[in-house]
Length: 190
Image (tube, rainbow, N blue to C red; front, side):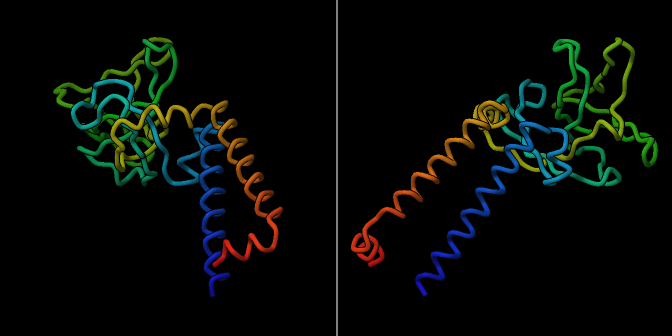
């Protein structure tokens, strides 16, 4: 019976390791695909626009959702061009109004406590809207102050180092266990 529990624990352990490694690798090398494949994705809040609900360095987990289920008052994460950065970034804000139907919907957004809607621009400086194609997902939950850890695991170099280190540890443990003398193995199991 003890062998079966050990086998079950090993299967669960390796399944979790494979899942986490798959998620981290996909998130590092194909971040736009993560939410579609896994159904969720983590982001780090980098501005105070949603305080006190979401603070700088909070990690938020966003879940995939049917666009037709997004309503006013929901917190969504979407892609928008940010002139200060000079590139697109992920923004997490409230939905203030939904205009249109189906694939033609436009989402008017705003930060915490703001009475006016956000004004988005495209990279050429023209006015832009948050559309269905920009939506990543709906806020699921937050992990307070976990942003530093999440930034590390979203960096491809750090993910590579983590994967290599985990593999080395597994190999060392397996090697150590395989080189134990039979008496040591028997005394460990008792």
